[in-house]
Picture 1 (tube, helix red, strand yellow):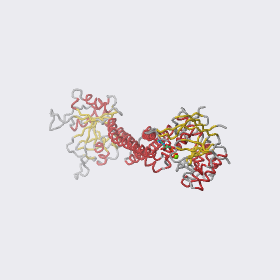
Picture 2 (cartoon, each protein chain N blue to C red):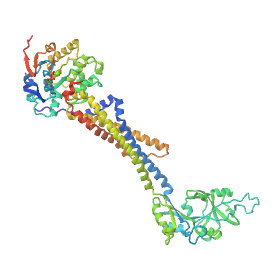
Picture 3 (spheres, rainbow over the protein chains, first blue to last red):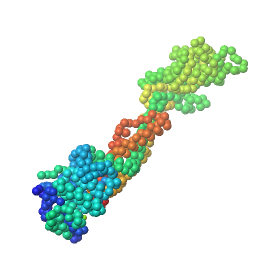
Length: 228
Length: 408
Ligand SMILES: Nc1ncnc2c1ncn2[C@@H]1O[C@H](COP(=O)(O)OP(=O)(O)O)[C@@H](O)[C@H]1O
Ligand SMILES: [Mg+2]
């Protein structure tokens, strides 16, 4: 098994008086194909961990290897390169651009990767088909339901074929029926071999993953899961 | 293993800028408005100054720029009678000036005092006086016809007529009509008082000295002998183009080497000076106005771009998550404002040219516009946009992705 994420003694402390230890020394390994839920109450450090994993923030201590690359001491452009090619983000609030069609929004997922516009569009269509929106290519986000919007966001995250899908409360803005359908989609992606890490405060959502990390006051512990 | 850097290709920047600017067309146009007006004002100002300058030069080129006239100064008091002027103009003034380099033709011209004598074209005095008219007489040297660019049917008199004081005349068109002289092939005679002269030509038109058209034009020699003309009243000179200034300074000395100050030389104002003074006046005012509106335009672009950066914080955070570096974010907003500026420059140039053409048309001017102006205006606009976008772009690049993604 190849490790996609390797955290060794990773900490994140925010400056201030007193300083906030948002994430205490954490050791986690996530292998390719893992489906990991990160669960914890509000303010426990879930987002801090996700930002570190997504290279939007840097640890104050420890090492983080993503897909075999030590992320310490690489340039901003290289970090951005990893975000562009190795990581796909899904946000609670979708972050779709209202003035662009679904296919344009999805193509944005590869904007910062070298390639032709036509290829990007082709892969965007493919990704939208994969999330079940092949029929809404030219729709604008405002005409889509919440569940459909999140599917578009997932398609955008998949466009550049990342090694890791990071989702921050992906179902936080959705009703229970839609939540179930998005979780079904995550199951499919997981089954097709994608590595998924998903933040949630909802235990029922977390139960869909095959690994669960609990965070409390910045301390990460692995929950022993009963395997079916 | 070093990971690949993220990229943001130029063509992607172009299409991102176009998409962003066309997404809200009304806002884009309003933002560009100040710059559009500024560029339009600049182009119209320079265009109109150019056009006006050329018109003035054009008008002076033709006739006035080649005209020089020499007259005696008003009576200095010595030797003159009853305020009459003392002429220092010699009879051979035309010949003397024609020797100067740059003179095309020159000739003397004087009104002749004929003591109210009436003129007629019939030999017998009609007691009713119906065939007699008061027609002025003007004495000229033969060179004057060329200097005045006169057109003559028949012939003009020559130096021989002048030297022999022959009683010959060229009738101005108007004078010929009044005296009822319609043809000259039969060498008609006219009578001025009791003096008979032979008409050898009719002046159908003249570019200078239009009073010739209503006069009986006779040789100087004849006027001296029969009508006691004592000195030429004026010398009319046609110079080569561009030589008027020079001839103006030489003419007085050539005619009266010992007393050049006694002659007054009238020359056209220097065309170059007119052109620059007009251009400078117009330019200074409107360039200042254009510059001001450009400044206002730049502030407008800066302002709206800054607002748009703040509004699009979420989008910036998203782009960073998708792999944009701070440079990519800055480049995107710089490109947007530069494209907006270029668009404004293009629109402003078109508007400025339109204004130039309309104003020119309303004044019957030929619009003149130097090519560098319309060609460079979009670049000027782009430069303004770039400048205006600098601060907003920097602001955008300083966006913290985590903060930006949290809200929206
Ligand atoms: N930029 C920051 N500066 C200071 N403290 C922060 C910052 N971001 C998060 N924190 C603190 O770190 C802790 C963990 O926050 P966060 O990871 O957002 O929690 P969660 O996502 O689980 O709700 C909280 O106490 C929060 O106040
Ligand atoms: Mg959070």
